[in-house]
Length: 124
Image (tube, rainbow, N blue to C red):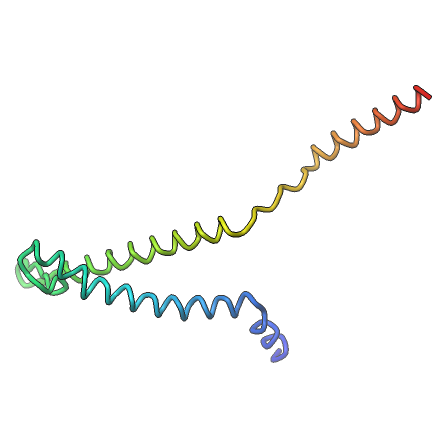
């Protein structure tokens, strides 16, 4: 069982996934800093407060942290857009595989080639 686990871990896909998770975590912290320290102050200028993450709506005894929720939405949109751009670039860089002929196409081709062969035999 230990040998199987070692083979599983040594596969390229698992290592690629681990690298992706680590880079994703680092990228998330960069995007969070971008939102908290650059985008929030810009939005806060229009709302009259500098720290947008502290934007809270109080209704009765409940406090709704709308600013934190908006931060999460902005983080998600930025990360999703960057992932979209990366996937789009990778799809452009990797050549598309040609479609393999389907069974129907192969059968038609074999039938046509057989007919051509038979016609050539008759001509001789």
